[in-house]
Image 1: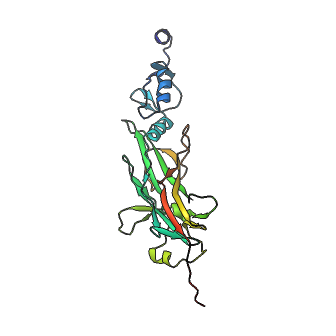
Image 2: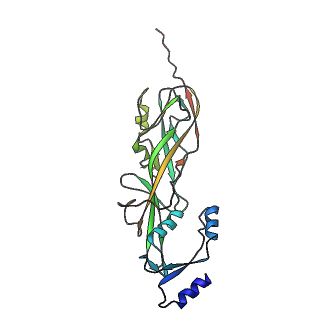
Image 3: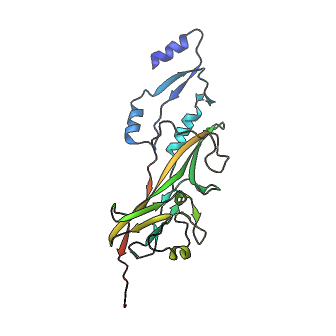
Length: 257
């Protein structure tokens, strides 16, 4: 590194460029931080690379997007709410609704179409910035059995709606309690499962996420058009509820004829 610096100073003409000081990302994994520690403490980057200059450093927007992505926190899922509560019955549907819990840092928002999303931005002192959004793309219901149940999870299950008290965003079934009570044997529903055999099952609901980024701070309701995948970012891990035990009983009928 010292030899490189002496070469640059003694060159004629002196080349343009910048020195980068390598620092670890505290949010990175232990393995990723170790790879960073193995790099030279300073890196020379020649000028003319058409990247942003900030306080003597060239920081491209995609780098800011990577930093924002490392700080992104997904919304959590609360305990699933089932209807009927307690025992369910064979060939009658069990409806599933899931409350969303805002992340510890950041905000949970919903687009006008009902897409729930979170976002994070990275900004330099001179105003250059990049923003990363993550939004729910779909729902899946695991009834806890592959043979004795039929799951239902149409697209609208992943669209957020307010709870009855207006305080919590909910995912899952959009049926009202009155509508749920009218559904009969063998009928299809939007979100949940219909069990075909009695027993005790552990039901879970999972929600998949996608992420993208754009230069600048957020100015739109949710991810904007032309939002690009985050380079080097792996797929976001789906959010899954804790297993909820479902007691399923046979429907008993009495025939006196």
